[in-house]
Amino acid sequence: MVPLQAVTPERLAARVSGLTLAEARKVVARVHRGEPVEPSSAVRRSSVDAVRRSGVIPTLEVVAETASGLDPFVKYLVAAPDGARFEAVRIPLEKSGRFTACVSSQVGCALACAFCATGQLGLRRNLEAWEIVEQVRVIRARLPEGRVHGVVFQGMGEPLANADAVLDAIAVMTEPCALAIDARSITVCTAGLPAGIRRLAREAPKVRLGISISSAIATTRASLMPITRAHSLDEVIAAAADHARATGLAPMWAVTLLAGVNDGDADAHALVARARAFEADTGRRPRLSILAFNSIPGAEFTRSPREAEFRAIISAAGLPSHRRYSGGSDVAAACGQLAAKI
View 1: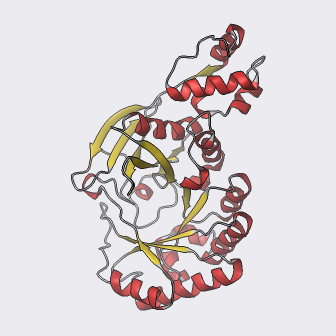
View 2 (view 1 turned 30 degrees about the vertical axis):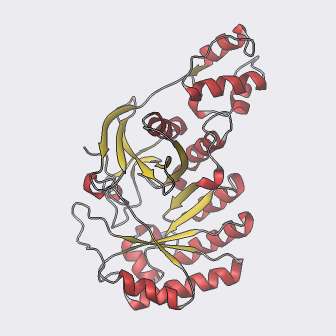
């Protein structure tokens, strides 16, 4: 049985015998509006019967909805039919009535980045495409007003380690009959899987790419991100350069500053050198996003007191940087804190 909220009209028409593409568009639109799939002047009864025999609309249970007391961030702990739990976060944007959905792609994560609570869980399983799409629908259904303007794959898991489901979910998110989210408002954030980065460029060329850099000094990055043992920073940046050339989009490079670990002058200068080389190679300047560390259980790291100095070095080199606000830390909804716990 195909989950109806996770297929495009083209795939539904190909899957259900006798269903025309025009009818499939009507069916998908009704599913995403929360309306029953019923016969009408636009969808024949025989087609509705065929869809009902072939498709289902599974749901996620909202176990907990937790609003931050610090800012308008809201975290959702959801459970799949098999009992697996994972989290999504509603992020407010500057323009009133617009929100970004931060979604998970896996239950847990195998990459074990030292500054991330999800990595402490290990990998339980990949999420299916419908489970990814449904996180956006859960958030949208609970909006007091406004709409989901964008999506970031920055919740639990490594998106490009579950690329099939992530790309299927993106196809539905951007489908006008379904969630109708502009692909340019979707960002896939990765710890650095070169093959996945190149596949993203081929199959979703309008979707933006984010990379967790941690440190532009290879040995420092390796101490924080075990994935570096399999894919060096040089490999990751080469893949990002291919993505930039293929799509014309500048990647976002994220650095979570950790006191005494990756916040030194040498780290800042190395980041500048990498960014300049990338721009010279691709004609696209990476968007540098600097994050404060959010505390997680068991981690020995602390927030860096040198953010201003770090960014000043970048600025002096003629490169802009963005201080990313990561909200909801009081309810463990901020970057790096998602661990599927109430």
